[in-house]
Amino acid sequence: MKAKHQRLTLVLLALVALIGAGLLAAYALQDQASYFYTPSDIVERKPEAGQAIRLGGMVEKGSIQRSADGVTVQFIVQDGTAQQRVTYTGITPDLFVEGSGVVADGRLDANGLFVAETLLAKHDENYIPRELEGIDMTSGKHKTETLVQ
Image: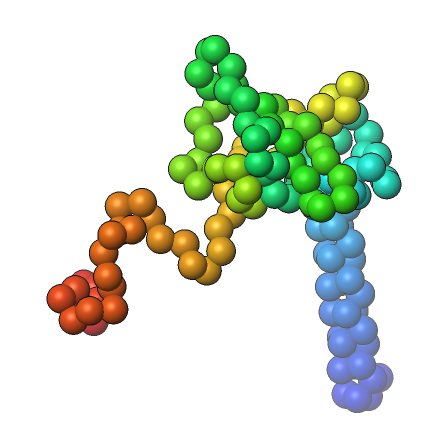
């Protein structure tokens, strides 16, 4: 066999091995993937109860209700056209407030309630931590140096 044919055979074998590895990885991760849904998507595509999904939208104003146990919270996530009731047990993020964005990982139960396992509060580019709200960072009084040079 000529050297040109050997190189071509090696390239084809490497390509087949890469495709096989990619397919194997995709198959192995298909159960671990959670798909992103908005409340409208849940209404349209109605995922199976118990399927891991990621819900994203805005926390509806006036919808946050905290239970007497102090760690369970119920609220409504909306995207402008649809709403989804959510319950979460745990400590909520500091940025979790009405009217803000939220991403919740969890599952729908048999009654259509989204049971969140984790909550991530989203903020816009104008976010300022509560501790720094009164500080004018544009003045020359505050240094912006870091320890890393």
